[in-house]
Amino acid sequence: MARLRIGSRGSQLALWQAHHISDLLRARGHEVELEIIKTTGDKITDVALAKVGTKGMFTKEIEEALAAGRVDLAVHSLKDLPTEVPPGFEIAAITKRENPRDVFCSRKFASIDALPRGARVGTSSLRRQAQLKALRPDLDIHPLRGNVDTRLRKLEAGEYDAIILAAAGLNRLGKTELVKQVIPADIMCPAAGQGALGIEIRAGDSVTRQYLAFLDDADARATTTCERALLNKLGGGCQVPIGAFAEMRDGQLHLNGVVADPDGSKVLRESRDGKDPVVLGEAVGDTLLRRGGDAILEAVYGQGLAVPQQP
Picture 1 (cartoon, one colour):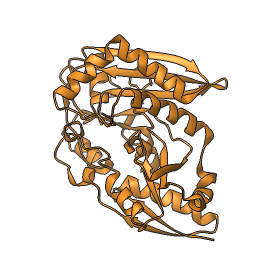
Picture 2 (cartoon, rainbow, N blue to C red; picture 1 turned 30 degrees about the vertical axis):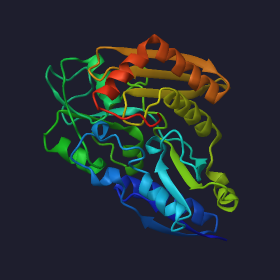
Picture 3 (cartoon, rainbow, N blue to C red; picture 1 turned 135 degrees about the horizontal axis):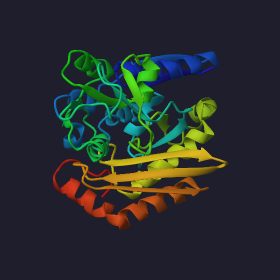
Picture 4 (tube, one colour; picture 1 turned 90 degrees about the vertical axis):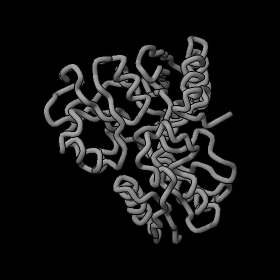
């Protein structure tokens, strides 16, 4: 069989993801090597992601290694991949999805509702911040960067009363001790693609694509394509206050979309059913823009809080 080289970020979660794919490929008889690549997002750790605004900040350097032929495939958290994959690359597989929802983690409190007034909550996601503030405007929300271990350590040390993280990362790493509440998607709409892995290759590399075909999950491909179509329609990157969550219901897609003001003063929600992932995602995106999402996003970009991925 083939000798395949995987490019990955070096965080504990990224390495878990890369090793997971390595194991599946080795089970098929392939020889697999791993190359760890440091990305812009890994180097900037003291600034809220929304204020950095670098397109492809967790993927650019890995794509450069892919283009140069140093690696044959890259394993990404799909939510880190820009909605328009740069020329010269393609997403060969989208893996079966982990739980895409966000979770509430705390040492002392059982849920968001149980937090006292003025409780200090950590998140650097404008999407989470906006929906949390809409629900509990009395909370004191502070930036929280770093890998999963760093964030959990800060919670354990008492720097925060609670933090919000993705269920998928904690489940994969087996670090669920402080998870007190899985937040329903209609309360906190997840990020587009959250919980899925995207396997990226050089465009036209049909041999590698064929090796990876068994990893491609039809439901994950449909739901995340729908979510990413909504995000693309809104011109947003992974650091803007946009949520998108699609699931299969009775053979068709059900999509929930959210655009929110970062301070939680305005949260627009829209949901719809459909069969075609792209058509459905773009339709919900259109509706959100017409209902005032365009003004919210213009204000966000104008404040320099986030930079759109597309012009």
